[in-house]
Image (tube, helix red, strand yellow):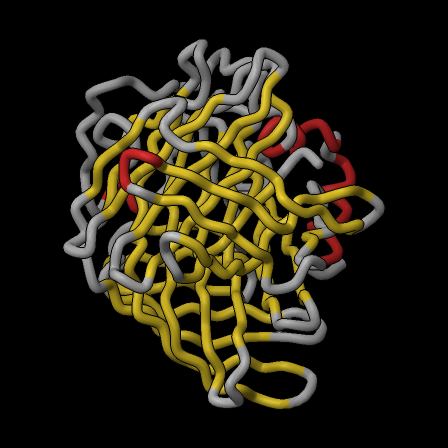
Length: 346
């Protein structure tokens, strides 16, 4: 039995709820795990690496790209870590589970792929210095977060990209302590939202040279949602004047909880509290058998933002083990630009 076959067998032996604990039940119990605390002092490069005593963590990169063929593209590269218990062992008994997602979105098509691994055997993981995150042959790597190489592939797509940071890291919420509900659930959350990107996409019609801008999110927690919160709408928007906006809405039975971070053209971030941003669905599309908002009005009155956010293609559905919508968007209105939108729970 080869390693991949053995992995598949072992994954099927794990209850599906084990994965759901990390990705679908983010409001579940955090008993036994560490939980984020206000006042945490980030330690780099250590914090670029994994935190196995927390239940859920991700390294999440998206990029808006333009091809030498004149078309717009988007890419996603994500590595998720989910823990069955707060420990790590270098064997098949590791309680750390890994899941990778990669995608390329064109104006016409959305390609995606998924990889799964158990921790402890070297098939997937993250090291802090030099930085490397991987699952199988998919890689995000560099001496640190300032300069990275990125690669992934699927049945009908692939990419090889280089990323160079143009501005400092951004810390969301209270110095990286990002509150997610009125009950106080929170995560540690920071980003590098200012990568210059160049490289090649490998598509069925041939290779396409691309350039553009990338945004990397780092987040970890053990209970980032309240028990009544069913999903979220998350926006990362880069405007033509050099300013940027991260904003999200968490949908719950007791109403929405929102948060936003305004980033000026020099990279200085200002966190804005619940209620500062508003989100209105303007148009939906039938995607994967459900109605999904593909055009939004987003407002941030404190910064004079009143924009329409439109999907490059409505069909950017990630039909992975835990399904969601993720794709590039264009921005018009008070500010013009581009960005990425993620929607879960539809």
